[in-house]
Image (cartoon, rainbow, N blue to C red; front, side, top):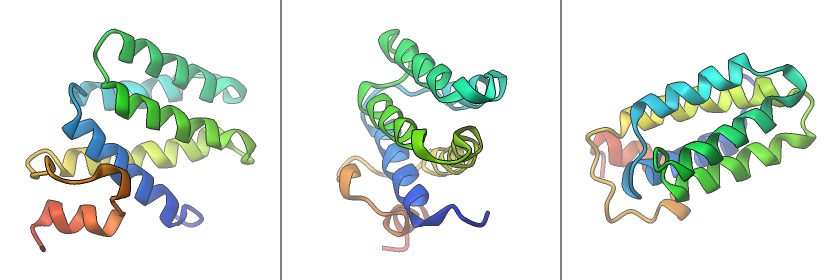
Length: 127
């Protein structure tokens, strides 16, 4: 996973926290995001993905806060060399963190300032 950098892990941790604490975000939606990305044409992958996020959020299947941050992140990929590949890497990390937080107590956590390391410490009960 070379080239991902800390930024992806921190952002994925924050969004996983939002997904788990701010309303509905069903596990199936994580897999659907990956499916939409994989089925999308290379050059329009980010547009397909963000349109799907908007749709699912408006239907109440993805909470608005997580949808907003996911969309911001994917829009930030517009200037990278291969946005679809970067989105794929990010969604893999996001899926792992979302699943890892299934039984974690995140209610009093400030998701907006959460780092990847803090997230892992909370999930694993490391204090």
